Amino acid sequence: ETGVTQSPTHLIKTRGQQVTLRCSSQSGHNTVSWYQQALGQGPQFIFQYYREEENGRGNFPPRFSGLQFPNYSSELNVNALELDDSALYLCASSPTTGGRNTGELFFGEGSRLTVL
Amino acid sequence: DAKTTQPNSMESNEEEPVHLPCNHSTISGTDYIHWYRQLPSQGPEYVIHGLTSNVNNRMASLAIAEDRKSSTLILHRATLRDAAVYYCILRARAGTGNQFYFGTGTSLTVIP
Image (cartoon, rainbow over all chains, first blue to last red; front, side, top):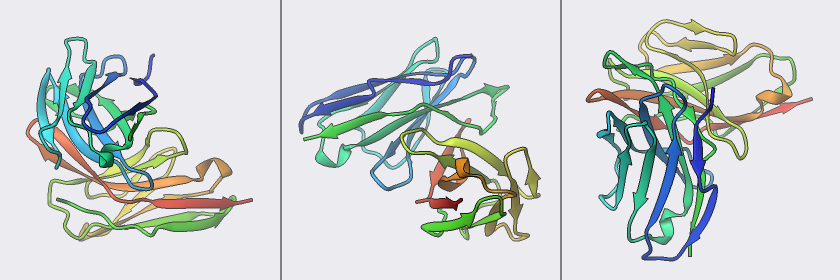
């Protein structure tokens, strides 16, 4: 069973640029959520995708957007990067069956974004 | 937003029990209480979760106060591998999905 994988593991961007982060969910998991973790802080919920649609969103501006693909993999896109966007971005997958999610998240190791 | 508060850090001797407290006074009736832990350079790992009743699994026990405004994660015998940041989290329903509200976590040090 393959776990959650994220790419790239590290990247450096400059202010104003755009970035795309990718996530492959654990086998059989159809729900994907994204989190931003600043240094020394707990992860902050960005949004969640189920059946290729966003079905939950945290307190993040519209320049944070995402996609989920038919194979359940997902992308996080951030436009107009700001210095404060520097963080570890975590992807988590979980199974949803019969409209009910188990609530147990399986996290990847994250993508470390540095904005200069 | 639902929020949790935890002590910043705690220490425990190896092979002794550890009680990690969490306050969540704004919890709503449908919010689940989850605990995850995070080792350095890794993503968080699920530990346990519950709604109203106390829960036990192979990793830990979760004790939930009767008014649900606080909970305690219990590690029965701390090992060096249990050294991590422990997050107490509220899981709120959001449409057909969930939203997880992480706190700042408790950094647990296990002393040999």
